[in-house]
Length: 166
Image (cartoon, one colour):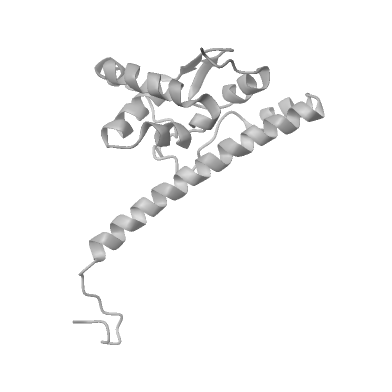
């Protein structure tokens, strides 16, 4: 059975740049996100990591939705990739800089207009998304630095003192 989204969750999901349309039971993603997903998936990234990097980790939309999207998009990859589209993050497709959704001012107005307990709940969910994005960026940075260290292993280097050269 499909877990239904609450009105607050729907409002929050609509703020994400990768979501084209959402209702209580379905999320429609942008063509750009589908394309980016497939490109990253083909490079070996985990589907969960890809979804989490755009604020849609399993804690937000559930594992089943990620699994079903992955299967459906892989099955229709040629058609999706042929449509093209801009990267979700503009010029920076890895999401390390400038990642974000709709205008922050609009979102803050949205929060101001709702009762306090509901806005607290939305803020809590939003913090999960924000922290998920931050963790995903940090994981990418760790992977990048690990590759650099791995490439440097066994290499000789000289800091000018002559002590480190072989």
